[in-house]
Image 1: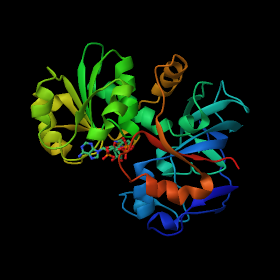
Image 2: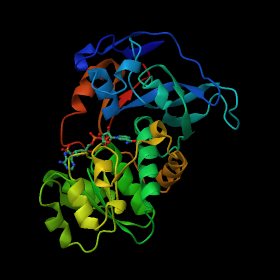
Image 3: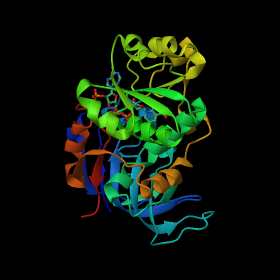
Length: 308
Ligand SMILES: NC(=O)c1ccc[n+]([C@@H]2O[C@H](COP(=O)([O-])OP(=O)(O)OC[C@H]3O[C@@H](n4cnc5c(N)ncnc54)[C@H](OP(=O)(O)O)[C@@H]3O)[C@@H](O)[C@H]2O)c1
């Protein structure tokens, strides 16, 4: 099969598209002939050799954790799914990648609704799982006011919409120029950065806060909500030293948010959810896609089209 791959750590230029041995679905897994894949911060960190999981990578390695496509292999212990079904999802976190390829083995998935483009679906899996997990852990429910720091990015933009769908009032931080984008997702936009407590004070009580940015705002988020227990971070490893929970998902043996994928599909069909795509690249241009993923303002996801 063809796949994006790298055989040494480095910048986007280490990525190449070429032949790679096909993977096969193990127990509890499916394999898809991929139509699209996502690009996530974890892919960039692994490629650059900056991930704590670096030593577990076998090179050459295929980056990418999210993909969508048509099932062509069903592993043992999988029932209710068959070849030809259109799905979107993510790889087993232990594989650290594998999604930017012609054939992708998925560990969790949901049926792709007709309302989602292949590119949207391909980029959705891990962001929807992560956002769902974070909202579950925080206990975001109808009537709560949730502040999301880093609301315009891949995970944040999904978390805003899923929290709004739960009936929460969402305040989302972003750059000044991200104001309309955030409002379009259903959030009350507020500029990110120092002085956040003063800026959100005028918006009334904030019950809960989710840090997606990992930009050092945890002390401010604790001050805004009044309690470290009301704050959750996905990206700031100093969290636990401040009494703030750090959610790392399956890696840390936590309950996962996979059930969010089927919900996101339903909400998409109802016109209440979409995966914002800021750029889509053909798989041959994976290096440009990785380069674009670090350029702000980061609104939603970057996707690769994998069919060719
Ligand atoms: N723990 C987990 O299970 C888990 C799972 C998935 C992702 N993550 C982590 O979560 C983080 C976000 O992922 P993502 O996919 O959403 O990344 P992303 O798409 O790159 O988005 C990051 C967002 O943060 C914003 N931002 C930058 N500086 C900020 C600041 N000082 N204050 C507030 N927001 C700021 C960016 O805005 P501009 O571009 O406009 O500056 C951008 O919209 C990454 O570190 C990722 O590794 C963790």
